Length: 336
Image (cartoon, rainbow, N blue to C red; front, side, top):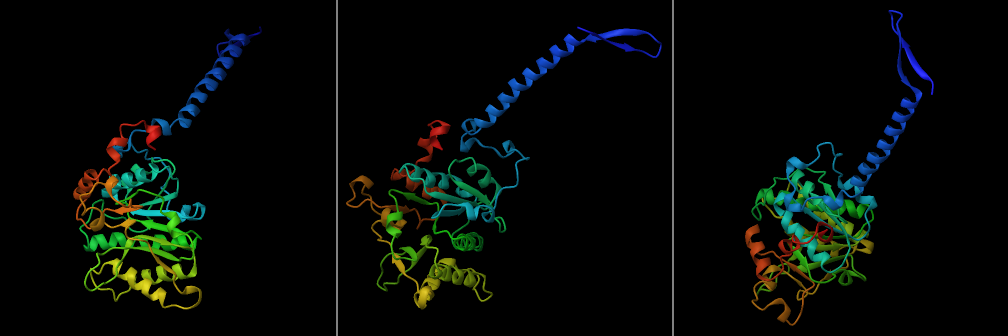
């Protein structure tokens, strides 16, 4: 091979290297690039399989160079209808895990959308597969569980209404539900047919026979009647005439009543789901009879009518409805 020479300012000429050395080095670096470039790609492909468990994710481990979290507006048009919608903050991460796992245990794969009201809940839940997780496009909430009917709590739950409305405006049917809920069967067959909004009871039957429907579990079909109800609900929530501290469930019931009084395609077709199958907390948990020994197995159980997260968790565990801890013993792949 020919030798490469270099001439210095002094006039001295010396050999630097020959072409065979250059060729050898070129081949070496080419092979090195192929080898380690492939390794980096394999690492990216297997990234999901090597993520830590949800409970182990720490804030300092989040890559600060990650792109800006998506908002509901970014994903709404691409979601498959119907959409199971929930909105949470950091305090409800484990409750939400339990909610998702109850659905996975049924081998169901609905289109699930979780709107996170703070960064921490987004960081943790965005590690889950086969669900869509976005950050709020409204003001962030406090990362805490607020007292029921407090001003802060009402402010948090008020946010669900524009989320429902935005999805309806994108042509999606919406099944909104709080995450202190477990599924024991598929609820979708119960909302098929000629129905615009499907609801559940939230209060016991009393002497006054007052009917109150739960705002934390409702199905909205993409239709003029359902959009009218949600629009009217939203208008009442943001109205300057709204009394301080008034909770949004009362406004929901007023919006339903308003919808029932409309005419034409805005006249609401309301379906009340059977309360023996869609049970509130006071109905299911007030009986000491084990679930498997009850004459009717519910489709859904709402762990409400109790104050505080710790009592909710205790009730779940007492009745064998807490799936998070047992699931953590499984491999990362199987649990997500």
